[in-house]
Length: 201
Image 1 (tube, rainbow, N blue to C red):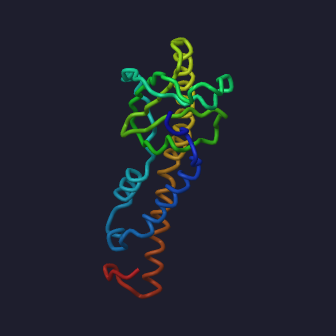
Image 2 (image 1 turned 60 degrees about the vertical axis):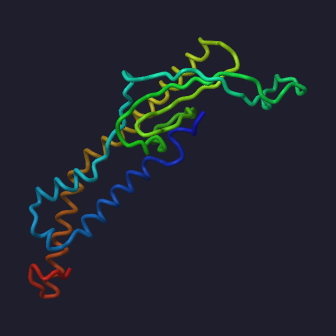
Image 3 (image 1 turned 180 degrees about the vertical axis):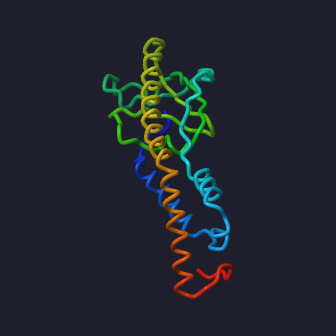
């Protein structure tokens, strides 16, 4: 079954964390190197480092593993006879969805979310969806797979929308931070009477 996808971390917390990491990176950059580098080079460096990578489901490469027999725990089945064995033989079906982007985003939920969240397992750049059934109802299995894939697409779209907003604002935020740090270094050096290249800031 895997773990609950798009849980438990709010995406907004991740985005705010990236903003704070950017601020710290600009503030802690070596002062002499900072002052000796053009705004454009600094801008390019920080944008490339802190831009958010969107998720992309590579559904044209979707695969299916060969079904395998498994023991299925049926103790919570309310229609089960209590005198029957606690497990029955069933089959496990696994769908493999390759993706590109930050795998950690599958553990985040966007501000626009639904009550239903599918289960899955992330391994490398693959999202694996597993289903265990004790019947041979192919139509029901197909319906469940399509429901989960549809939900995953919806979550990925919402996540990417918020990441796009962050990326759109990133150049302006970087520009502001570069100006702020330059002014901070200049003011500090003027206060201390320190010349450029002293290494003190």
